[in-house]
Length: 225
Length: 225
DNA sequence: TACAAACCGATATAAAGTTATCTATTTTTT
DNA sequence: AAAAAATAGATAACTTTATATCGGTTTGTA
Image (tube, rainbow over all chains, first blue to last red; front, side):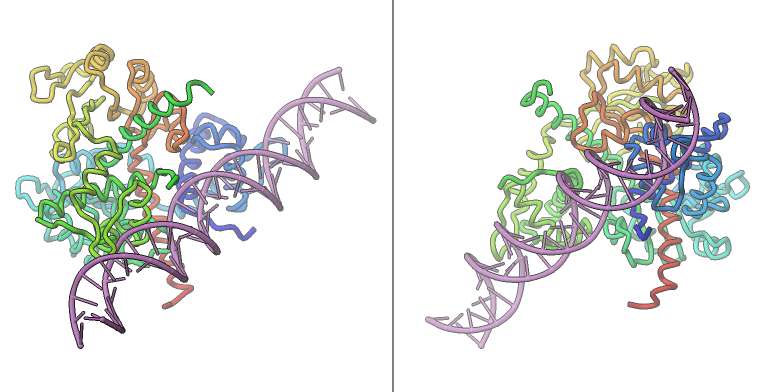
């Protein structure tokens, strides 16, 4: 019973939760490890193991009860109330995120955007865009812990430092700058003040090309299995 | 000498390459495993191991030669010519990507966007936005292999199928729909036709919140180490 | 010239994560 | 009522990835 919840597993748990909520909306009551495995691209064994680690039992023949699963997952993932975030840098990507509707459905709410450029400031908008220098006060007052960083690369590190000083503890980094401690914070044991996750689009695309090439060349060597 | 290049390693190799190109631009000639480890958040030992696997030797006291490293990395990663991609779905996120300048510097070129909505079509733009039904012909003619998918969730699966049929072999998926085979294709041995990488922003943010909570609660139990 | 420090290289060890296998239980069917 | 089928649960083995250690070589310095 003393197994750890490791990072890939947490990601899977979040995925289970989503699928389960959709299934529930469709009127389903029970689900099998098989179904969930399909849905998120894992084997049934992984699903069962994950659930056993977080202390959920299914019925030997009847699968798992969706309601109970959802409750437990929400509990484990700590998703009681909506998660409030800010977007720092309201250029192309930043403003696209401001209008991203899916967040609401996922229990995430962008409470404000920040930018240095005068003509992007809109304090009265539904999601207000505020001057960058108001960020520290805002973060403190509203107790914001997580932010999306979508500024130009040149200013990424300096903005990063301001954010960390202001009290931001988690950042989703859309710049291609490797913010210090980024890699280390991918790991669980990281003691740094601020956890950074990188969304490195260029890197992902490169990687896709690499994998495709790899697959093609191995397809040549091993014709059909 | 017969060690494999595994997935996390490929990601690191791409990061090394970037850092090295920046260092070279700054006029550096040599670099230590130490420096590179710092830059991408890995230990020096990992860096040395990575290089030894791809067959690069440094000088016992003098570190590695940047030029040689860059050449070898480009070779291993297969990044000879610019990588041409398309963007499918030119809504908020899609059009933000169309204008994303960093791609060029990273050797990636968006050659076209595609959308169903009439008023987004701009065949004469610098990066043309074409009607979705022209996608298959375009992909075949231009031999496009990799695409970014940024359509609304509701149509994600159907568009996905069209793309795969058209010959797309790698997809960077910005929808929150788990496209079939998505998880399996994260792995190296995947034999599926199309490799999908998910950029799941909501999931990443959730995960950040989780890690922050985790860190806070473990900070309570283990005061200072 | 000799010694020490810096850094690479390789091997071995360990840790993490996934997959496979086997057993047990419940439901359904005959 | 009994047998078979389906599925959870647990454990063990295996694969992958990272770390740690030790030896060797070069360079710099006394």
